[in-house]
Length: 466
Ligand code: CA
Picture 1 (cartoon, rainbow, N blue to C red):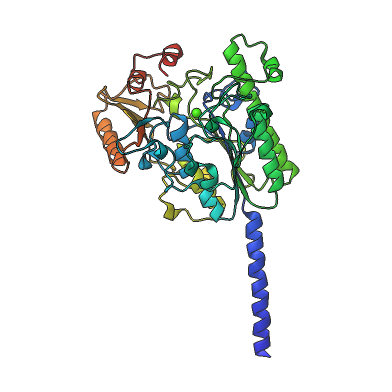
Picture 2: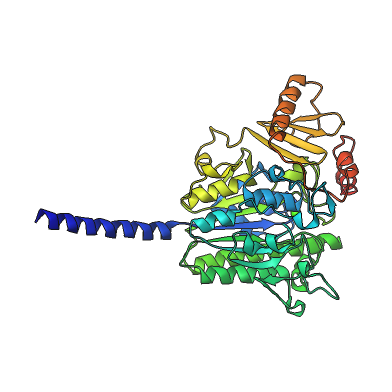
């Protein structure tokens, strides 16, 4: 009798464990990372814009948390994406510059891409039983070994390069600029408007995977150049006199509308509450796309706040406080640890550089990052608490207190030599863990050096130094 009782208890336990697995499976949140491209810090209503309606990005802020000191790991597209998608400072594996043909000794053209030894967020989440998709701009290598389908993604709908036309490309184009639907190239004549096509695929993927945890990397190439918008969107901005700015506004408006469609798809499938969404811009406003960085100094390509501080919103109902602003420094390096924690996965063994933000968002007494670092060739920077130091080759060191001087107007380096020394030491200690760049910027160093000079003041002067 006792033996039969034990047997029944054992079977009941097995059922319970099995149920727990099913419950855990259902509770794993879907995770969506929406990335904008080259937008200005102040081009979203919640970050100060008064010209472009962004009701859907607003909704993310209102239902989630908005960050006012969020940083990317690079002020240009590809290294920023390499940091975001690996959760590691991209200089650790030589991805310091945008892909180019200016190669380091011993490096071949086929080596230009995201080092295959590095795992991506999709690799990690696939291990947690997520369905994964990358949509939009890739920019992490054009060789087959770097193709998203070989980097942890079950599906890919996008293009390999760093930019392309939003409409169909007239005349010849290389395959790397083509729109890929997994392994197939979408005929160019079928391209309507890229932002809308990416949105449609995102909605389709949500519909198909509503019953299974999924990870979606939705990397719109809006609002990167070329400046191209649909007539119907341009009409909404007829009062904007500058033609480039009018087109830019219409492009950003189309992206916001796309985000609205994604939110509607989650709602329609009743998975809105169980979905963690990040909205992030990949680097500061570009010099060539009519973006608006507001009061921030500098633009894309620089270590000024206007190059590396970005719009960043997180929404996860009942898990992340709604409608609040988070003022402490966070990084795109935090996306993987936070996502893995949400998915119930372990983060410690992956050599990640970021932190799981979730515990930090509930109280402000502890900062997620004591120090954050940047380097791209001759220009490097460190932020430690309120202090930020910029080091550009042999130029005078720049030091700012971001609390009292968020616009970086007063160089305090000569006033605080001890602070300079401490921060330079932190920076060089961090650099000891980096690899040599595997390729260099085709633009050389001259612009980088010039754009970090104190005498370059004002947006017009900044725009002349891409
Ligand atoms: Ca970009």
